[in-house]
Length: 132
Image (cartoon, rainbow, N blue to C red; front, top):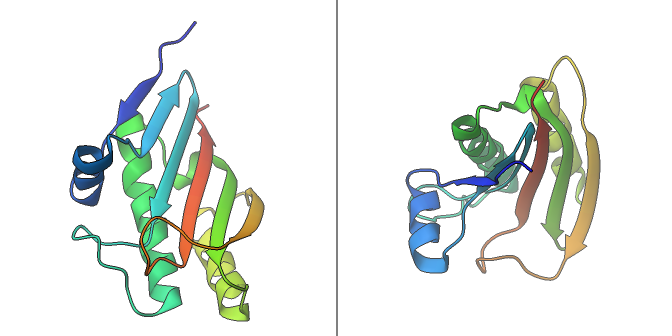
């Protein structure tokens, strides 16, 4: 059996590890699981939803790296949304998929939720990557 290994990203990841004893990334063999939120290193959330989504995708990229993965390895995306799914959300996520994963789209599950980890959060992205 392969031993799970966790990774903590600098900045916000380190702050969350210290406060909540959580890691953002887990690698077991060739499988990498991670989550990313739209906050910056100070846990501030951008005002605009598109900027929050862009930050969440950058955070996923940062979280994947220490485990040896990139967005090119991502096979499944879960997005958790507070409130409704306005057109700019789907449009922005589709644009980001095309940017980060131009060769192959992921499977994608969207889930509406009442709240996320911080009161200002509107989106959370969770991914599964498989290393070839």
